[in-house]
Image (tube, rainbow, N blue to C red; front, side):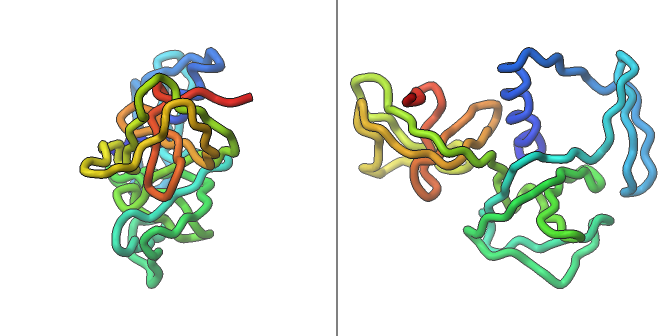
Length: 182
């Protein structure tokens, strides 16, 4: 699931702008250094992708940091803290996000988000249920968005190809249940 998180956001943005997505056909690798994928149309992609204005929030108790080769370094990130990231990289078969000049966090320890500053409105005539950062319904809770209520949202996440807007700490409304307020 985490492996596709950033890609899902890119696909969502790409679909809204009409960009064509290609699939990899040929890959040449060398340890953990950068490698190039040649696509069927001749274009190329690397094992690293620059991210423009993205962040990660730590969801594990403590997130160990690694260097560019996937080796542990003497630093970690605390639970619940958010960090800017400017690069996504595959190290082996794992996805990592750069949070410092030589510090990468494993995607299994964080969730990726795109910061926004918008107001959303709960649609329909029933309360809008909320989800956590893993896309799981928050059960046994009296927390929901009242029909027609408006909420400021500061980030969008994508989990399993579904987009969610954050309305509170670790509480997200699914895209299909809300609309933007102009």
